[in-house]
Length: 431
Length: 166
Image 1 (cartoon, each protein chain N blue to C red):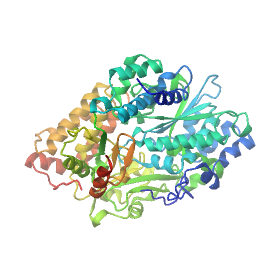
Image 2: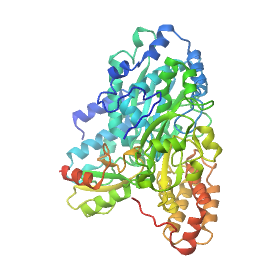
Image 3: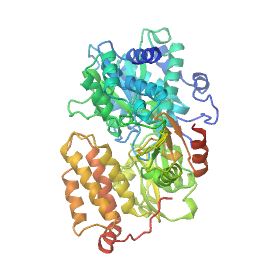
Image 4: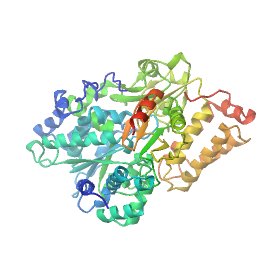
């Protein structure tokens, strides 16, 4: 279900109209005006980057790194090929916003990537799309064809001397490829195993060339920023948290879906937009930024606003904006067991602490959940976690440890009860 | 080993990448080969990838077979094991589980008389549990043969879908 309240990406998009994704509909909404503005006025590259910096746009994929700053890391005078890459490998449990961008408004992403290509002097770009949303990949390819036929992609865009082409590449079932260097490996036709950093992609990226990788939502915000100005985007959110953001709400709410709202909106308001708690049950816990973000108790969440700083102050992360809502009937041990299984399944196997550690975490949580927990298991989980986090090439190990630490911290009594009494405190049923 | 249409599709994949970076096309090429196997195979064994097909695709793309094999075994949507005419993958990750994903998987298993990871005796259906498909808002979500996503799969919707798949 797609529900869009207001915001820069979905403004004016009638998601019920079957052709809302087409070039014609996008043009009617003011699409490609930002690109025309840049090309007509020959706006210098550094001015485009400065405008993105002014907007306060922070990476929408999870890390929240300032997009304009990232763009400025690209070597301007590098003589060879440079690339711009979009990360639509959306597989973080709870996150489903980028699919809706591609399905309902793909040209916003295409235009954003063309502008990025212009600003950083890249001649080609790739959009890496999660394999499981293959229909969205096919639709995106069609949107690319439309843009190419209209002279918006390829040689001499709109009759100028600026040339840029864009292609779609699909994943085929590997969560790790959402990590940017794993994504580059995969784009090169290899196993998606993360690279050591440094060197960072801005100096050694795709095919060893300078590369900038941004999330789908980040790129799709760029046309608005250039057309209406960075200041207007910034003002749509709050200082240091510019703009509107897509939140994917799932779990025990009446209307799961995507909501594009200003950063800084209270969580309570967002919950209300999503129709409130399903069946009038009590809110127990919320994972505010995708499965890798630490869980927060419901009462803590109700006091927070949805922006990077507020959520981070409370000890979690805004991440990708994936809000997983759990009611009072959820056994937190069972919930954590499911997440632990996921990270074990998806560890790429490259680093020993992650490959082995995710297996240990799952094994121990699984036995606790099944009433076979032992005294000392919670300490064991902590020790295994400490030997994983920060000791691997990429952040998947940390992502596996954060939920374990936060679940066992905020809902420790449920774990202890299960270990001692071999029976869950909450009679859990998956609905 | 592959049809002219499939080879033409692989050519289109190759054209996306710089001339000296044809290896990038291997993911698309293996997917195209798998789709042809699925559409033309008569038995579960004929519907999945195997060493011969992978070697053929690798040679066509111009990379060592082992490099293609690495890719085919790393990404879990490339079927390397015999698979039913309809591969049903249900997401049972946490957000989906909170919205009926686990129950949907069990319901399909009961209806077909198979467990998760199994194929029906007539070779028609394989049932798998999947990881996040990036569609949690539409849960329960079911993926048919990797590419067709079915949303809001209540019991009624499952009954209807299974009846459609002939």
